[in-house]
Image (cartoon, rainbow over all chains, first blue to last red):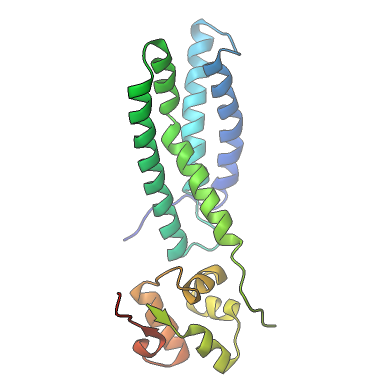
Length: 137
Length: 66
């Protein structure tokens, strides 16, 4: 079963896109960056699309050595993120009401891809740190 | 499922890296398989067995709990 993955270089491109747009999104959501009109629309769209694209590039780019274990790690991270997202969605829906809920829903547009990035990169960090208990020359 | 990959490697004196390169996976994957943290797919199990020149059942042993 073939699965499409972006070339390895897309991971760096992903971080370059993700980090500034994530910062932009946080500033817009918190109201720290106050804009209106067409500029507001443009910045909102840039933040959402940038975070989504950046997350996908970071998580769905081929590793240096892409084998079945990295595929399994990627799938596990996606599943874990989906479960976590649904749990948070239910909690937010029950606990938050009014205008605040709209802000939460705006953030939740990109929450799943972001959770996937965090989970997958964390699992890959553990995987890459795997040390043999014996070394041979 | 247990495996005898570490024993087989020691018998022919090869490193995890060499085995990994021979079967087309990363060294970390071989480490994870040896530690029973990861179950290889059928093709990978067959490649490993073919590399050692032994039947797959002699490298990978099914346990009662599997």
